[in-house]
Length: 230
Image 1 (cartoon, one colour):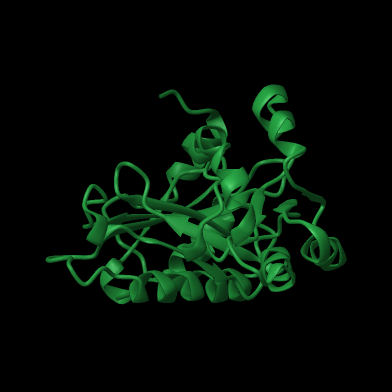
Image 2 (cartoon, helix red, strand yellow):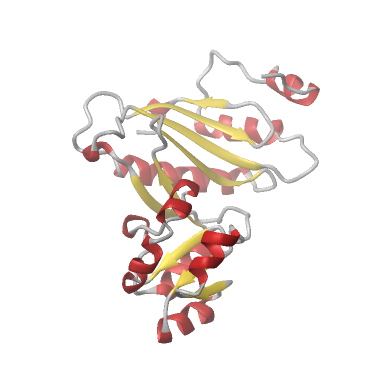
């Protein structure tokens, strides 16, 4: 993969053979964010899990103390009083069966998170093939299948993010923007790592956090020493 001049210049500041302390890594990653827009700072965590085994799956959610810096648009599947609650809590889109053809046939995806009340999962289940691959399917473990739609919407708006293993057993999550202070990024990073360490599957043998890398949207990655985190 060919990188641009800015990326190549930035990469010179990173010693690939070094695993940095979290504070050093965050400071360095902020300096590597040289794009003209406010880059997202992401964490990529390679785990020792084997996601093919149900007892080694990792999936959950955590509220980052300083949010992600992104305006999150929420779609809620609910009826009656629960639909009214969702609107009052600040959800951008609220509906029921009438949304199915819009998503299925028109490819409507103007939202970032989908929440559903348990009684709506029969309806939402019809959208599994469409929402699943995009990581939008509501899930009880992530707190997105719930009767407490007010709490769910408010937490998502406040900076709740979902983490899960991808097919290569890596977790990818945003922890903020390059414009955040080092303290804000550090708080968010520590909160995320704390949640992931707690989520360690009991069935896992061997090293849990294999590698942890911080990276801005357009810049090179900075390795964090995983032994300083567990």
